[in-house]
Every structure is written in C-alpha cells, then in structure tokens.
Length: 94
Image (cartoon, rainbow, N blue to C red; front, side):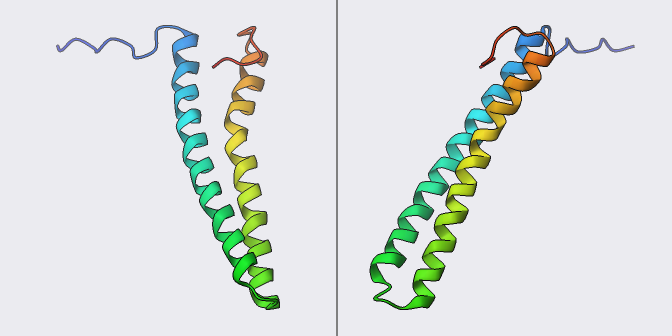
C-alpha cells in the first residue's frame, strides 16, 4: 500500500498564509486593471468634446473602476474578519 503524502498545511497560520498570498495577487491584478480603466476613463473625458455619449461612457468606466478597487480590497478584509472569529488573534493575519 503506498504511503500518503504529507499534509500541505500543518498549522492554521500556513493555511491563512496561502489565502494571504492569493489575496495579494488578486489585489495586485485588480489594482492594475483599475488603474488602466481610470486612464481610459480620463481619455474619454478629455476627448469627449462635449459629446454626452462619451462623457456618459467615461463616468460608467470610472464607476466600475472604483467598484473594482473596492472588490480588490475585500479579500484582505474578509481574511481579517475570519481570522478574528477563529481566534488567530491578529486584526491583519497577513
């Protein structure tokens, strides 16, 4: 009978650490996309020339970029809440 592989997570801290790394990658990716979208929105604002269609599109892009930033912040906040409920003792487990 083959031996079982060793456990990947031996402590709760290592388990939370994996989610911290994933949250950091997610945050970085979302922030890069949000910055690009803010630049695109600024381009539409500047080149709109008073065209209400372009101004409306720029406002929509800007709103969704801000929503993306908020979503990018959520993983770390959720980790902090979960770890405080589970007794990790730290407000920021990462």
